[in-house]
Length: 62
Image (cartoon, rainbow, N blue to C red; front, side, top):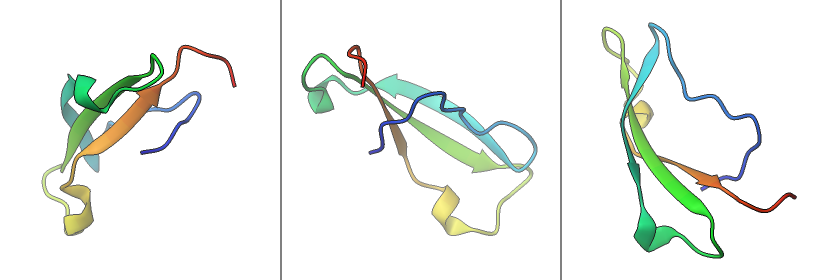
């Protein structure tokens, strides 16, 4: 999992994001953890695209 500011979820014809969900069992220190999946459009030859991705949204400033 990576902490990033100004992160954009991939959108467009190459990849589309879907199935975003909060993951409370992974949250610590008041951070919000969100998972999402991506799918190729119309398909992606790279199998690495088909895995869950995670965002950590921190309430504290870095």
